[in-house]
Length: 540
Ligand code: G16
Image (cartoon, rainbow, N blue to C red; front, side, top):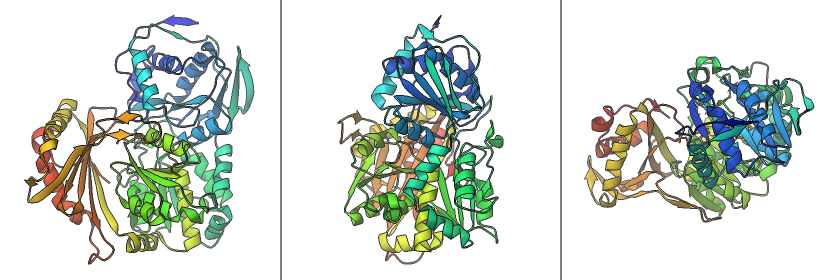
């Protein structure tokens, strides 16, 4: 049935789909407008098959019912839905690929909080299982700006809790177990016997699912299949508001896990995942592993898992991610790529077989097994490597740094700052970028500065203005960019990085190594003048 509507401004998908306050998504016609823009941008839904699921946050089930009715009215042949409306982002990516679907609708605002006063999101992934490329998201934005009608069928809600197939009009509705296919994929990649033997030998672990979507996946894979002791998974029941927390796996938001990992009876290994299951955090007993280091360790040890035993084709990392993985690529003699922030930029490299492992400083790592980052995949590869090498996390990191040196790293987040102030600060910096090389700030010499632009080596697509980069004497680097995933005001991210070779004397904390660089950049950009503060909300 055709419904008349009026365009709603501001429906421009960001780094990872459209994220807004839940109440905005719940406003009359909003979800429908954006969903119709997706159908229009992909050339309509007629005869197509779609995967559909979300992270279980507030409004998930209602939104799924609306999208089912719209898929029917747009002529779709089938929708494949996770039972209860649940699918983690990597599991959805896998289902799109394994079932040969044309694409998928994933409902999540990722690591942002859930609830009627919190956040909601919708993104569309294409037939390769990955986030829609920029050309398609731009089409969605343009379409939504001029939309005058959408199509939505009438009818009763679909039963999402019973596995099986039903029909509605011309459309088949297939409800599947959200975990089964994904668990089988993981079993095909990793040495489950070696990991099971590790647990059987007394190895202990704590996995914090943060009341988000990975709970059922982690219970099934870690506890039931691999034999980790009961209670290994904490906060394992998905809740509409994630128990009131931010399902963001970093030391600030996963404080329950961090407290356990530094207690006298800490388990051997700790990990957490986010709202939709694509991000991960790795922590050993008293040893937090930065996402950039985790990417490097996984790339260096991937050959220990059956799926990667033949070696990896190459590695890709987002620009603000540290150069730790570059050193591994060099040692392995494989290609290394530096892409803009956003998993979608890895898609063409993965599809072309140029890279096998990808990762980002924002706690995402993954491989060519799907086209999304994958939190549990990273955890299982870590377990596989630990099971083979028989080292603790701290020992493995020490071994890695002794071989490659260490890229000290920190990300400082200034959240919910007034959008105009953030843009003014960065415009001011941008205007000075061409003349910065050779100048000094706070006693530190700037050696180069630019605005990052990227040309996709496979399809030639160009992306400009992807962040500001400043290099200082001694090889340190600072990067500034605006977050594309916030839902309130602007978030300024400042990334700091300094390499120390394996033979550098003494062990020094990252904060100490990075202090002069931090002071220089805060002064250079005048955070105090523009944002009224120099202290970040979160440092990871
Ligand atoms: C999303 C993308 C990631 C990207 C991150 C950046 O993550 O999927 O590829 O690294 O955004 O976030 P920001 O722009 O805030 O720095 P997620 O987990 O939110 O989907």
